[in-house]
Image (cartoon, rainbow, N blue to C red; front, side, top):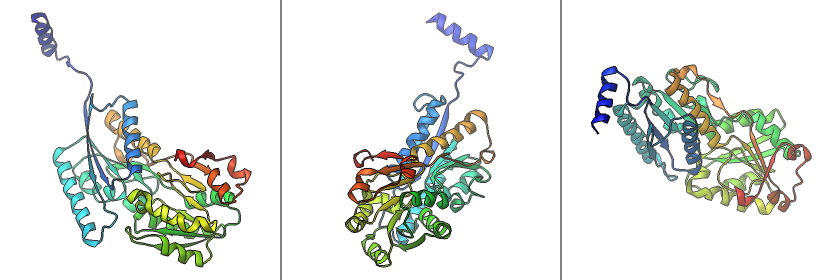
Length: 337
């Protein structure tokens, strides 16, 4: 014991650090408690660990989740906003090394105060960077950066056209989710250049999609699309189940422009939440370990879209997917999604 104390004293007097490994504190702010956000968080934490920043060893993470009720009306939305602001004040007071924001609302309503406090911000699970105040799809702004799920509708509908070559009208039922609204607006313009008309109906987050879907079917839509929209993920994907109960008996296929936790679509096109979370992790590593300024790091996106086809569903609906799509897509079964 005396030898150990003598050795420790020598280290301290010589200025040699007893522990050379840095430690980090990260705050996580998330709005909406849905599975895809859990996947993004897992990807983030795993990427940090791959780079030597390991929770329980040299990393402390405090994750704050603000539950956004599917039935949130105006006053509940105001309440959610106040909860975000309160959480941000607590985070600023704790002065972490970095903040990870999960979702568009979490980023949009927190980044300015966090950045002004000198805290680096990295976002994930954001589909439309401009909707949260980014300068462009590839550049964020002073004090923050992240990874995006952004899906260019022109690429999405080129793939859709390969799978469904006779498609001329697609219906989309969506909520007022920022990501969904932005996708529908951009898709409406870009799909038209490929000869596809988008017909859309907005519903409340607590509403059933059935009435809207029937109205769009009466207008002649040949397929339905599901954008990134918290509306579908909340309430354990009940809206997708209700939507498919209306369209599947009529042999109308569903195309999902994201990778989430439900089955029944013929085609899935988009980025994977866990991979986007991992990309946000690479940004955090550069900031924490290399001292990179967030604004010097471009927004990251998944290089190649993940394309999945469900042959079980397509066969049941009598849809023969062409070789062009089968060559570029991976096959999945309903049980595996």
